[in-house]
Length: 214
Image (tube, rainbow, N blue to C red; front, top):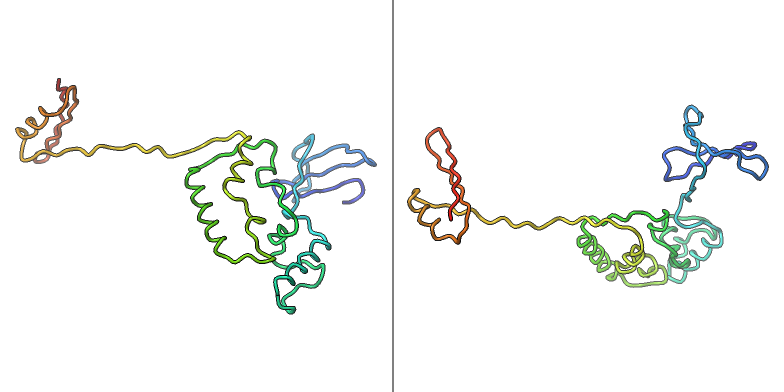
């Protein structure tokens, strides 16, 4: 912030935005290049996302320290009261209920399910591992993670594209030996109508004959 100019670097944007202010009014919003400081695109609005999922505050960090005390964390491993520490973000869900998932970050996003059956299996395997850990004041997986059913319900009202691999079976091609006579005999026993393809291999050549048998 300098004078009436506010430069904002949103983590999801390729380029920052420069907001020109006149008092309490916004005169213009432009994306600009960091190196040249020149404007590259004038826009009407922008979305500025936070750098962290949870808003950091002294009160929150004090509550997290108290929670760690309840979990019998040794005093020497406790962070100073009100100071940030490694891993405070995921632990915040223990004192602040989750209010949304990644799908709520965008306005009516298109949800692409790539092999939803495999995604569900992976989610169920994750929860099996999570439930093997003994719950404590600082660990309750239901407060930190979504179950598959909860996440799927949050995406239910959104437009979605489902991509699944089709299972296409290929019949095994029969091989007849020792020669054409046995092959023709076996072909005559096939149900009609039938389309039969023959390959005969000789020395240095390959011939192909396509027969329609009725």
